[in-house]
Image 1: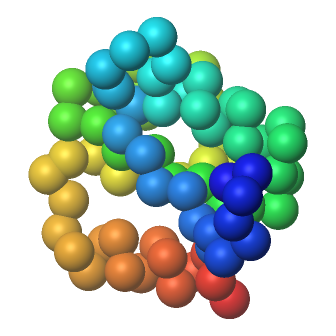
Image 2 (image 1 turned 120 degrees about the horizontal axis):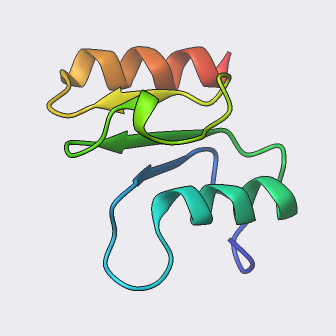
Length: 77
């Protein structure tokens, strides 16, 4: 993100290897690039399992491609 200006949306799983999870990544991106929309996903957690802004889209795995496409279209509008 620091070296690119063509990122329109961040789409991330909440559970990722390493010390930074998707929630931490989302928080950092929101802080530094607040105009970039963020979509989070997980197959192991539910929205109610974590503290996340209600306005942040969340797709529970498995999700249909149409659900992701619709969310991307909504965020791009």
